Image (cartoon, rainbow, N blue to C red; front, top):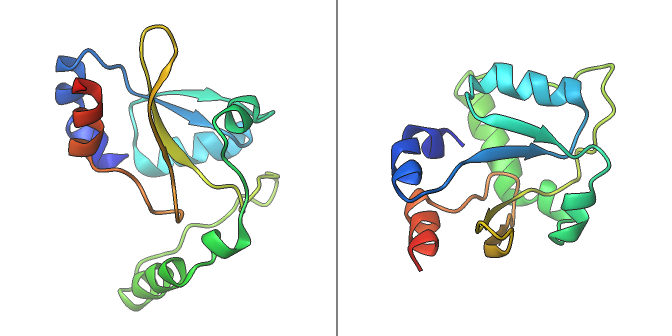
Length: 132
C-alpha cells in the first residue's frame, strides 16, 4: 500500500479513488492504519461479504509459505520487529488478501488475488489495467 500511496497522484490522474477494505475487526483495522500511517479511506467488511464475492479465501499453505517464512526471518535477522496481533481482537490470520479495481458501474476490471501475504501487483500493473 505504501507504493500506491506514494503514487496516489497517478491514480487520481487516471480517475481512480483508492480505498482499503479490511476484512477483520475494527480494532485490527485501526492498528493497521496507525502502524502504516496510511491516509487512505478504509471500509470494514467484518462479515466478509465482499471477501466472498471476489473469491478470496483462507490458506495455511499460502500464509505460511517458504516466501513468508523467509520474509519474517529476514526481518528478524535485520533487527526489525515483527507485527504482533492484538490480544483482544479476533481476526483470521489465514485469510488471503488481494487487490481489485472497479469501474464506476462497480464492475471488476482488475482482480489480483494474492498468492502470498506480501504479494501485491505493481503500481504500473494497476495503472495499465485502469487504462485498458
